[in-house]
Amino acid sequence: MTDRVRQAIPDGPDLIVDLVGGDALRAVADLVPDRTRIISAADPDTAAELGGLSLTRTDEAMVKITEVIQYGLVNPHSDTQFGLDQADQAIAAVETGHAAGKIIVVPQD
Image (cartoon, rainbow, N blue to C red):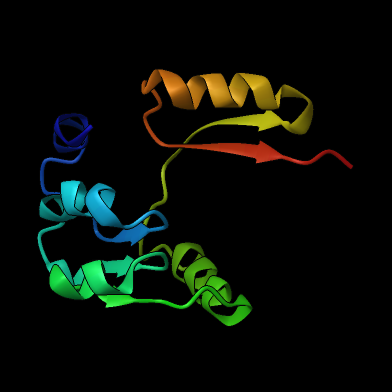
């Protein structure tokens, strides 16, 4: 995965927002040019070890992340959106490892 990110973003991503932690976070830490731009909501110890910050999962924190995205400070590239009735296809897209961004499942009205 890191090779694909480097190919897509040669200068590295603006920010890493981690929701997994551990080895997964360590594997991508070198992608960001400035490790102070690593933020983990899953693993504060690993984030600190890598020079990043931790973020407690709260409604307020999610609002702040949303605002950062809305103001265009980062681009959380999404690959594909699926309806909730297509969740099996969304899971298959993630499992193949070929997604170029986030896979989004949108509940229907």
